[in-house]
Image (cartoon, rainbow over all chains, first blue to last red; front, side):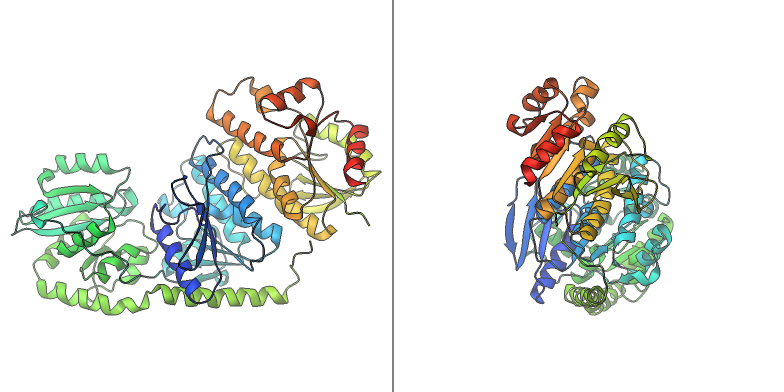
Length: 387
Length: 196
């Protein structure tokens, strides 16, 4: 399995996905080796819960930009992968490890599986603005073309990969991401009064501070609400942070908003416990593992009706949905929920009950079924190594 | 029966970029008269044809938009690797792999590593000679890749003393691995020394 991120080097949901999936696959008897990145601060080889993790340091080469950096990492990853023999199948995640996966497939003539978590066209709102973005988009096409099967985490992503990459629908398999109960450490001892008065309720945002996650919509909603009994806490970092700080000042709500940046999991757990409601106002969301985590910790969620979030949440049953991009609709949803403890309780209880559909065990079982099906097809075909 | 010699290049007639294709079209048929030769080249589409006793695997470009030469080189090599992997599997492997310049040498490293055969690289120019000095991160990135490839070759062919000295002093290539002369006679003599 090839992935550019894996703990402790985690950028977004992809790293956690590969961590939990590989662990669950290993627990079900699949011998699995993960090739991933290191900056030198983590071990170059170790076994984590049955998974052999091999980390590649790409800094023996220099790169003018991120795209070249990814190509360099793939180059060195392939070099290392060729020393591993005896594998039956190659599994890559996103365009970020596509080139090493495609090379490995062609050299060894072993089947290639690709999980496409999101697409460049989707991330860029349907508009590729420069050569880097077009280059990435074409690599995504190349990956979906070369892969034996493509895994997507939601119905929405199946549609996106089919529409944006021209991938035949019968080549795409939907396997939802999982939620890892008890993955959070014990909550850190934090003082609620550091964030809110006793009569104030806490509205929590967890996610990267980037446009596609919609953090600006929550600030606009906070301004429209004009309530003195709410505090808004943003957990996560990103390029939009300076803009968001300025926007909250311009909207006159600076005293109602905290930007905590990235926090350790025990602090995040504690913050979830303090929150009355968790908000995920994404404009683009292939799945939304973070919403499952909030549900698992018993926090009622408000999500935009977009992508995977739209599929996870049934409005009024296990959460509240609002029109994507509408800060007015988000404000109404917050008003509805924070003033109705009964509704909050109902939503969080239903949400917890429904989480059984999203476990890494289940994701691993479906992935193993897919591996077996591919290997069966491979066995009867003539495309085999001859050297 | 001896396995073929596999040449990898980004240009060979009719797929011409610059002077390299003309030079290769003069030396490779000579080599093919002595050894079974397979050549992989960047072409218009994927396909196989024969010319002057050489079995040629051409590969089309899978990705056509590139921010700069470095990303182009990586994807070019991925396509060359696709073609070369097919050539290896269809022809029972290779006795040795010979690539031409850094821009088609990345693929050859993996191919030789995969089948465990010797790798030869002919060096015609380097980033230092092309750009006179390494003034940008892009140039440094190309230089690093050149160094990475040249150091992995069992033999490096150069045309003159100046290039040999440059490869030793700037690229850290072992002087004993550098062969002076990039002509058919020198190349064939070196092949015989390794293969016989």
